[in-house]
Length: 95
Ligand SMILES: [Zn+2]
View 1 (cartoon, helix red, strand yellow):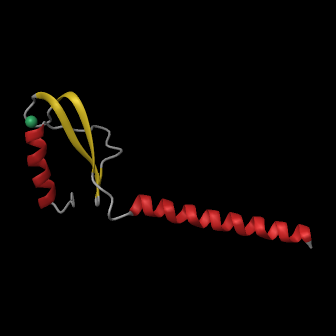
View 2: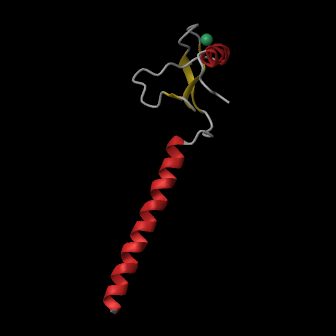
View 3: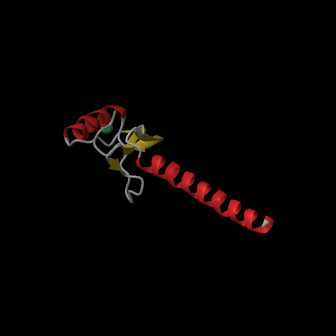
């Protein structure tokens, strides 16, 4: 009976652990409250005006995901601000 109890509690512990991780993962990857993520690089060429400056790019927002963009486009501060307005008009939620 002792062995049986240990087996049962091991199974339950695994199930509970699995469930917790399942929900934590789900929360992390689908959370609508995820803050937008920006990538910032020093001295990159702006995709719009061509200036070499500190470049910004929006990597991820609530309904926007460029984490696997093969050709990431960086923009200078001014152009990225304009691009951000454009994305907002397209319905990307950047707050
Ligand atoms: Zn620019």
